[in-house]
Image (cartoon, rainbow, N blue to C red; front, side):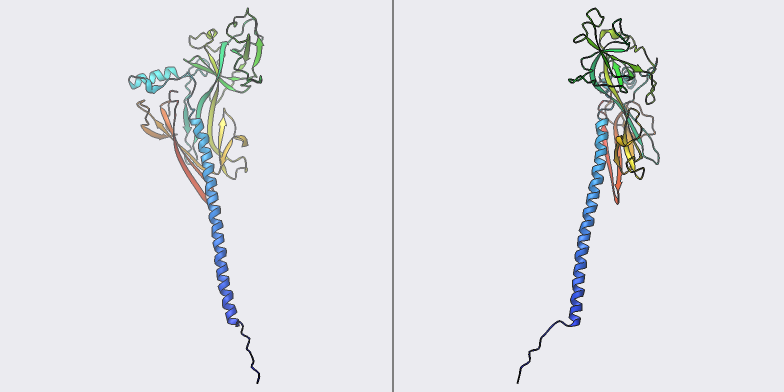
Length: 343
């Protein structure tokens, strides 16, 4: 008799059960990887939105820390003793750069425009010290083209290139009051002789000539042409020329994606919205509150929105920026102290 060995295998039912179990496990693994991928994408998007918001805040912070700086044409209200009215009077008489012809226009360090349901906009002013010394405003017999005559020493860098150029907005100050003007041509250098009335004020007998314009600028009419400083004699060499900045932050259609999204723009000295001044995209909202110091003690007494009438008693600005991309939205709020509150 022969013994027959029966070969055993999987039944159809066992195979089907195995396939079902394997499918369930595979589906779980796929879902796990998908969940990990989604989480990674969400985290990456959140980090991108956060970084975008931080970039915008850093731009604003850098400008706000300089807001109101006009060199020596300012006074620190916190050091002034007396009544509120006396403080206000002293501040007003010491901090009003002479912007337009024959009048005394105030330059408010920082202010905003209320957007209502739309984003607000932020404006601020400050100056960059150039240490260019004024010699005269007329031009003597040796000066070919009358203009603002300045010491050439700091007008040019070590390579001989001018540090200022046509289109720059400049200020002249004698530390009591100032005047602003637009440079209409690149500075020209001229060598003078010992017989000149400028001799002794200059290094190497060189002067630079700055030509100005009567163009209106950001709401300020630049029609003054004689540069008179309320009793100040410019021939004494006490005036200094510096660069003036008017910075505006506003939200508008992105120039990068053709207006599909909104962007925050940083506009300098009356610039129009363009790709070159687009700071960040995906901006949903931009809101401002201004901290006012009503009793001049350097401490915020109340915060008001941009629709309020703001003066030079603003000592802080609260900025709220909302950025979104895809499903992620980040709202960042920062409060910045205005260091140059003497403006």
